[in-house]
Length: 167
Image (tube, rainbow, N blue to C red; front, side, top):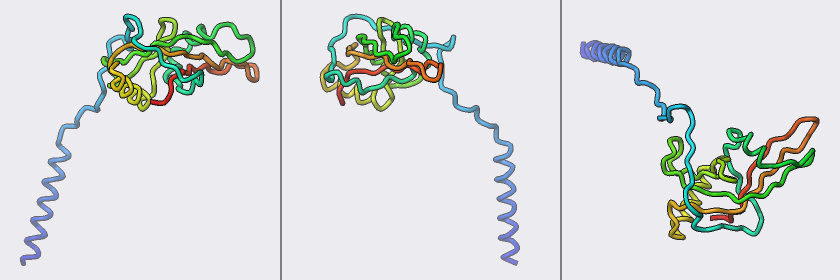
């Protein structure tokens, strides 16, 4: 008798739980807020507080270049069928108001945005700025726009590389 009562209690509890969960309103999927109009571009102001250099190694790649490919293609200059290796000065802007990434570092060449540092690189760079007492400040380094050579009749993608040593 006690077993039947326990079994009935378990069944009633499971049915109640099922109906509670089934009737529960579904939460709206999480969507981070994006700016109206679909794009966001920070603007660097003032002179760079420091110019970084790693002896011309250009080992740090900028991400998100596909969004800026027309700008980067123009900055690569005329290089015919060969690969580009156009040199520029890059501005590095810690972007505290970026709605997509909280520790973003925006990269500009010739006053035009060309992408961002990868999140792990941006975090390391921001820690470096803090150590150097340059937190939140605009800095610069040399940059190279590379790629864009012809291969099987098609132009390859361009990439932007920065001359900043490891943090």
